[in-house]
Amino acid sequence: MVLRQANELVLTKEMAKRYFGAKDPIGKIMHAGDQEYKVSGVLQDIPDNSHFQFNAILATATFPFAKRENFTGFSSFTFFKLKPNTNAAALEAKFPKMVDTYAAAQIERDLGKSWADYRNEGNGYRYFLQPLQSIHLDATNLEAQMKPSGNRTSVFIMIAVAILILVIACINFMNLATARSSERAKEVGVRKTMGSFRQQLIGQFLTESFVLSAVGVLLAVLMVYYLSPHFNNLTGKQLVLPITLISIACLVGLAAIVGLLAGIYPSFVLSGFNPVVVMKGNFTGSSKGKWIRNGLVVFQFWISIMLMIGTLVIQQQMAFIQNKSLGFDKDQLMVVEKSSPWKPKSKKLF
Image: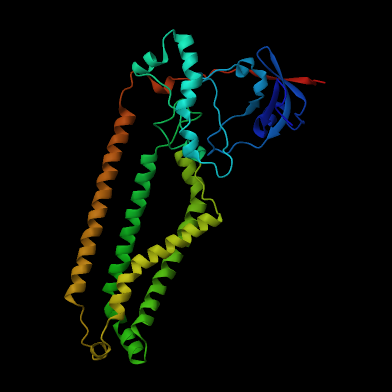
């Protein structure tokens, strides 16, 4: 077991290689200031998309203050795992009583005032449960996080833009399919003359739409897979497309939804042709269909204009942020985080 004793240290593979090269670091001694730490383990490097970012872990027993009873300190991060089938809401409801029982006495002792007066002044402690996976996008409820948080609003905006682009693509498909209806009118007429039912024709046209949608999703996945490294280098991000059962199910569902939305209207239009009129060569599109196509075109252009306006606004905001004077030369700014210099020691600790 590791981190059971004081002054024990666990390194990531990257840090172990940095200080010890190809040598086995287990049992080696490292110095930080006047303290010595024994390397008791090595763990895998932390992924870039992890909330936890560190190169080494020290045993809690190393720090005596960590053993002191303290209900108002914020000098460390504390995480805990609930047992299966635990009612999180019921546990969270007990937090106010816990604060009144434990934190109140310490505040009264440290500040020299009653807990009631402290709360009447607008102060207080509010504890709540925060799922680990939701920390990254929570920029309002949490303070002093391990790394800069993401922005939930930005994620929703990107999702909305993606949905609007999909809607534009679906509208394009519907317009093109209905505009080419005269080319497929004779095909529909022949099929109906040979005994095909309308439901069969609807199924055929929907199948064509599903196949095109599936091919489009497959091409999109291939483009994302091969172009994402270049995109990450350009933006400094570490975005990946995980290939899991859940992601595959989502992609299949996306292909099905897009195929249905794009193909439902053309399939009903094309399957509704009168075979007698079509075979005589007197086919003309209905005025109702033209109104629907024109409405779709107007709606498509409206979405496109809204996206262009949003892009211009964001571009101007980014230009303002980049060119606004901050009162100092940010290119000459250096940030030094508080740390102790690590130095390896060659001898082993027995």
